[in-house]
Picture 1 (cartoon, rainbow, N blue to C red):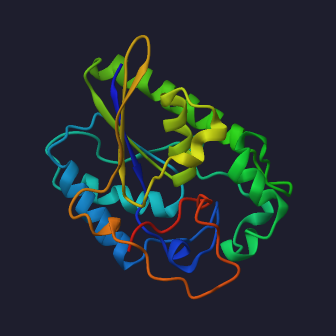
Picture 2 (picture 1 turned 180 degrees about the vertical axis):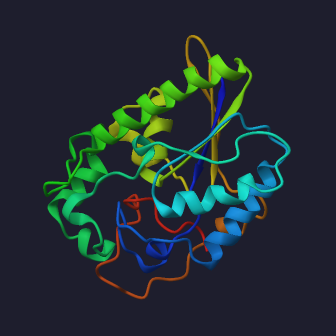
Length: 240
């Protein structure tokens, strides 16, 4: 089976403002996110991409746009697949993470995410998010192999929680463990699908320097901040 490059969108205005964007329209990359998108496009330029598939949300389409510039071969435009769209956070959409951490559901999302269903008529369960995203990846693998052969490489641009869910499936991990995976903005993760199992080749590769490993600034004492053990719902803004 082909090799899948999973690309998370670049840093967005919602990431830097600490808001859970979900499917909110008009959430764009910030200046740093656009630089990230240009940089990852340059890193990926030598890689022949048989297909580029994207979440329909603006921040993902803006991230893949530089991938199409000055490429000798490959697709002229991304294909949009709604199954790679962000988790539908329902009534949590558009709210500050510092508010959401106080909700009883927050602990479920952290400790038992397979049981987490976001509130409201538009809310989705994380298990449903994983199911649709993995189904999309498997289907696209089959399409790419049929059109370009088993050695083809293709790219999917999606969101932090969605990519974590796909990686958890590839690892054979229960979804309840997926919060152990970190996927930063514009990071690259790679899965090579073979006949009997997937091989996780790379995770959260942001390339370049290692300043992201420096300790974070000391706390300002904000009592609403998340625990050091909590995963950032939505994926967060990444290392500064």
